[in-house]
Length: 392
View 1 (cartoon, rainbow, N blue to C red):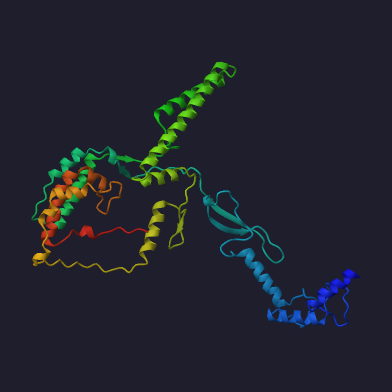
View 2 (view 1 turned 60 degrees about the vertical axis):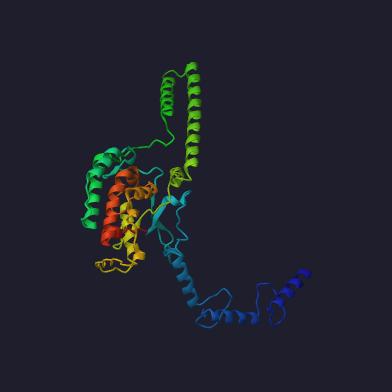
């Protein structure tokens, strides 16, 4: 009785008192609570056809259709970008991309529950494909021959600045073919790490030889002891080689930060990158060159195309205060600026690499001095200097 009275008092506070003042169970509601439930359901638009509600859990047709619609959306459609029923579970989500919802696996009386999923899975070791384009090996170039070829090209001062610069670019291209070797990338199953050296290669061969001999004579204790010794030597040598290689990167990372980033990326089994993109026709591309072209097209589409027009030539200044000493374009002064170039920067639209220019500073200072002097005298700059390659 004490427990029953406590329940009745709690229910009275909530406004669930019945007309006769009795409560058989805490789940039996009176007329006062019935009107409250009806008002709440009417606000939600869930009134039954006959306007009656036997229990607070009995809903009308409108409310049932609303529930079925939400259930259908959760099963068939993506909710906030993800399917709440069918998921791909993996320890490395970066390797799964392009998840597509396929045909349904089965149906119930009202809805389809699960659907088939298809996705692309990135391998830990990417398959290297041979490249059709050769790349110049700048470190192995013969820059004495390169300087001789550049000095042999005579650029007259009376030539137009555009003609002079075009001849300079052609001379650079011809000298590059003769003085700088090219190398074509070849596919390998597995590339050696950068800390790999000749000593490690010799020890690993010795270890493999002993391993083959132990398989032929498994009970030979001397071979096993020698094999264990060589294994320890390999581990020690590899550990020291890695330590020296990482120490060299740390010492050089202030001047060459790309070395540190390259080494960190090489330690990743799967790099975070753009796996694929859809073009305007809806075709999915995974090739790196096509992905870059799609990004460039999308990046350029936000700009307003400008009609090509000829730039007006600069008018020569007659004021003495605007005169510039011609010694500014002297070969000695140009050479000072050439030596300040960063050889690790990428080449521009003319394909002239700063590493080559800095390696042949004496030869390039003479040619560039002539071009700068001609440009200043004619108040014109080469049209190639106005070109730029903008990429996202």
